[in-house]
Length: 264
Image (cartoon, rainbow, N blue to C red):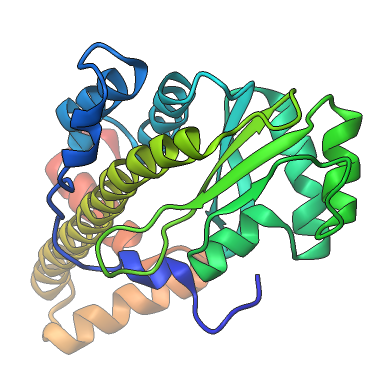
């Protein structure tokens, strides 16, 4: 996806965000769909779910928050390319693919620029004709795309709504969608930060574990082969090259055989 920067960089190694204030939502009844969705987002703890589960849950709550939408989806970077990998209906991914093929359309534009894009009628709007044609083919006649922006960070994606009616989204529904998108962006940014930190911690632990087992294997070789520490490590490296296996795996095998000689 083109643009001045990679939106995913907004998610790297930054601390958790507080959910934004929802004073505007006090204008609606506490039992309306938006309030119920916002309440569910507030209670959502990202550490209880995988990242993909979190994003899919946001899609489901978005559909609940904006009942005028026939379908919903989220544009995000997947392997450094904009994609709609999370959606309420499979047709969403098919419609959106026209945008990604052209590298342009309301969803990637909203993602890139942080702007809200509303199509009141795909039949009469010529901004993105290929996207409009694909939407109409699937019975969609109006859309609404909003950036998922958490605080002053770059957007983490775009939240997209699709309606089978012309003029499916009014100004009031756009405001509702913006309120939801603001909360959802914070949840998604925190989910990314949590899992980035978790993955980093996992990699660090794996590195420490590998070093520990290599040191054990070196100790065994120093005792059995009468070599110093460097010589023991050299023996491990040569064995790994000979068998085309990682040094840590060779070390783990050696330690296991020493611990259970009867299995060797």
